[in-house]
Image (cartoon, rainbow, N blue to C red; front, side, top):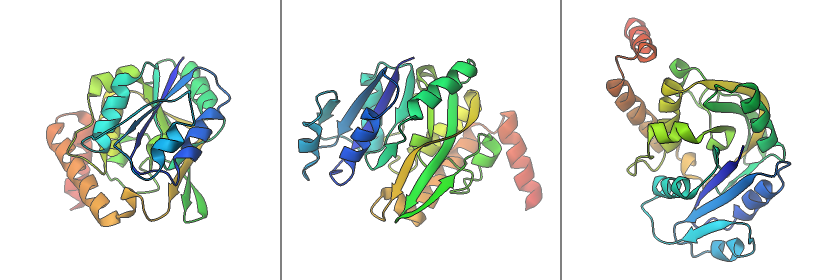
Length: 241
């Protein structure tokens, strides 16, 4: 079982070395780390050059979703993990994902717990794998707060398709809605990595993020209203109001 760790990057010099080192520290040997950088000018490229094991490229792109799509196209692993440049994997993350997939052969996506570092304050995000709960996008208690908290089979992303290029904030939510609708999600009880929130992340702008969460949710519901899980969500919502 080969893992592809995929990292979109742009002017990430503050954190990216820690992300790379967290991947190198894995107690599991069959993996690749692919980084698509958007043309950084802050020293990020000099960091990437220090690590010959990386597969990386740097140049103009159309945003994070574009970089994620390009990294996936370049990858060859059976299991996909997106590791943002400002986040880190725990040393046993790949081994734990491997064990969970091995024990649940029909699983398409494995979701686990996540350590959140919010300006030095640490807490654990324990997300749900229930699509109906995900549709409420209540963050950070139910919604998987960061893509480092889940891994999925290559076949699932091929089924869902590319991340939309016009979404620069909630492409992970866009993907998860479709993953939970079209695949089997398994919840595992281990901590996969650390989501670093320091106020400079795109997700730190809660107003914009909430607008995009609602936009993505509403478009999804409109598109898949006939699917039973979505229909039940809509009925409950109707009676609540």
